[in-house]
Structures are given as structure tokens and as C-alpha cells.
Amino acid sequence: MHLLFICSRNRKRSLTAETLFHQVDGHQARSAGTERNARIKVTAGMLGWADKIFCMEEKHLRRLQEKYPDIIAGKEVICLHIPDEYEYMDENLQEILQSIISEYLKKFEKRG
Image (cartoon, rainbow, N blue to C red):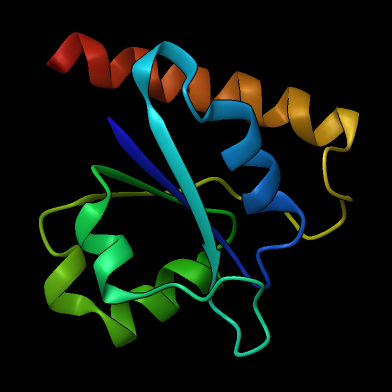
């Protein structure tokens, strides 16, 4: 499964998620940001590649819906509601991501 993690600048939250979940159980993970100054900026190609898209906040989801409505239509896009208050690989952030994402992945695998 191709997992795409989105935050604002792709320096902390989404990059941590990519690091944690890439090559876990055969999944491929990438991350990107929605801001102009993002380390890696989200593109239509990335969204097309992704099987599941995880946004850290509602504002990221809204930006995707505004800029790429046709591409994300029919895709599973999940808002994680994780605020921008963590550093890259922060232990608390890792625990939150492991807990939430693992539950989603279990649900996805059950559905097939």
C-alpha cells in the first residue's frame, strides 16, 4: 500500500510518519507539505500515487480539496488531528502516529 503523509512544511510531523511507516509490512510511504516553503511540496503525481492520504490537520485536507479536487475524489483521505507542536521524531509524536496509523492500517487490510 502507498501511504502519503501531509503537513505544512514537511519537516516534522509528516516526515516523522514517513520515517516510521516506510517499508513496514510492505508499505511504501512518502511525505510532503502544503506550504510554499515545504521541504517537499505536495504534487498531483504524489496524490495520484497514494492509496491512502493522511493529513495532519483539517487545513491540510482543505488545501488538498481546493487545489486537487479531481485527484483526491474517490481516494481515502484521513485527517489525523495532530497539531504542529512536535519536533521531528519526537517520542510523543511517534507514539501518537504508531497508535493512530496502525489502527487505520488494520481496518484497511480487513477491508481488502
